[in-house]
Image (cartoon, rainbow, N blue to C red; front, top):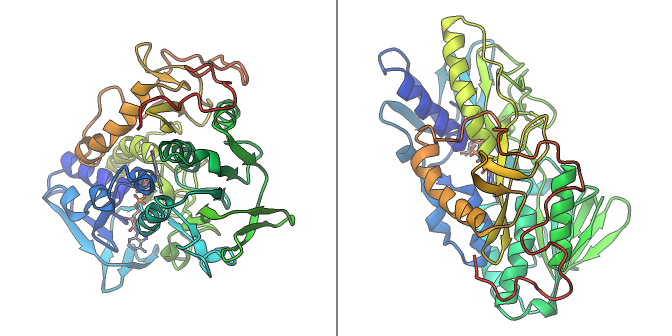
Length: 431
Ligand SMILES: Cc1cc2nc3c(=O)[nH]c(=O)nc-3n(C[C@H](O)[C@H](O)[C@H](O)COP(=O)(O)OP(=O)(O)OC[C@H]3O[C@@H](n4cnc5c(N)ncnc54)[C@H](O)[C@@H]3O)c2cc1C
């Protein structure tokens, strides 16, 4: 198992529960022993979690009988079925690639130059989220620009959630009317999926967040406070929050035949078998699938992947049932959240999840916000240990959903959706 993050941990634990140690030896390799609950990075900048509250030792998340090694992966030798580490090597019969996506801020000129971690931050890393918390706490006035440099990124809704929470946080601090919030994206709308994009675009507008679309950041001037687009457009800021480019882990590029030009691993979208070799499977952000890079996707993939490792070892045909299921709570501030649920074929729709009785889809509600808060407990105590969560299977559930919903016909949020100038949420509870 390459990587001891979300996917590597849950798959190793599921495999360990399935086979006794005398039959199958499981080795997990990661370069460090700090497992970060990444959705928690969103709330650290707003003082809603301390950095140490979202980190646990990786080795302790793995069941007994799993050999955990802290060592950087140097490369994979597909022909020899061997992984070469910084200090040794591991031979395999089956390899699971779970090394996720890495941040590449160095790929954008100027981003990590003058002003980095002073005027320009990212909340996508633990040091970045912690440093940003310090800066936001004293930010009194000016322009706060949130910028996604390019896709793919982990959790594509997280930068929007950051805008919604910033609106709440600055309102609570009594300085919202002195801060201009702007969301700068390479997309032609707030999000990729048309129905969700329309809903999220309306929410940005209602909360007074400017939307700048089709902006491809070519350079960041941290000292001068400018995002500079490839097309010559510029967006000024006093405080910049940038989500850097993402790629697969570097060792993929040093492993002939394993990855693509971005170091993601070409993978069958339904069986999760790699296209590099039949004994190599891929889970989570490391895969080049047309699914979101999200923990929920990684979780849903886990069931099919573990089944297929078993089928592969038994010489049986693989299960091709992974449908691209993704499920995301979107924090919208003031104690509310939206839930979206979709797969390769169906974009986010209205209705309820997981069935006719459940939490509302595509509607702001307090229940969704509580769901997001509770998720951290599920993550450590059910998802990582590899337990089945009732009602949360890998296939996208269809009951209770408005599957015929056309873009533009979606339900309005509970506040009416188009409220005017001031904050309709202002009087409400905090997250
Ligand atoms: C700010 C933020 C908010 C998010 N919010 C949500 C959310 O609300 N909902 C949701 O579903 N998802 C969310 N996500 C995404 C989610 O955290 C990831 O999609 C998920 O963790 C992917 O799991 P993974 O196993 O593929 O990768 P990871 O969990 O990132 O694990 C990859 C592991 O590989 C290791 N590794 C990489 N390269 C090497 C190497 N060369 N040698 C050794 N080890 C290596 C890394 O150290 C790491 O431990 C969020 C992510 C971020 C950044």
